[in-house]
Image (cartoon, rainbow, N blue to C red; front, side, top):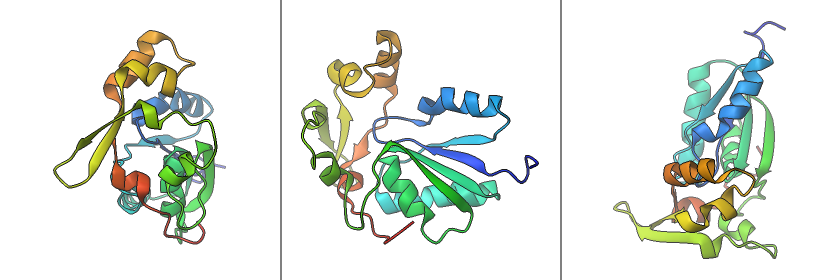
Length: 175
């Protein structure tokens, strides 16, 4: 299969991450001769974020494999619905929701989640609130397997997520 025939791997980060969080994955994929793009998920609303990913797919102009992490699973599910360019979905520790389910509902559905206590909320001019993980809990909460320096950098570059994005339910019945 030529490079032009291979699907492009489109990596979609979740809440509190940003596209550079996929850097090591992109390096590995490129090292294996695959084309990969890390999309900068806006983290504003499920449908708005999915529309952005659909725009990325159109811009690529080739078949894609969508990969989502965490909240990114919501986004790739919504973005793939009815999209013939999407050949496969890959969920990496990601939400794989049923119609109507939200990331917030799923994160509280099972015992053990400590995310709620780590969040800092503040209002945004577009309405509602935005959430980020407090810097003093970021390392333990989000990336406990990384060294402290890298965790501190990730805490400083985290992308906050809106309340709307976390509470939006999936609107498609199947991807």
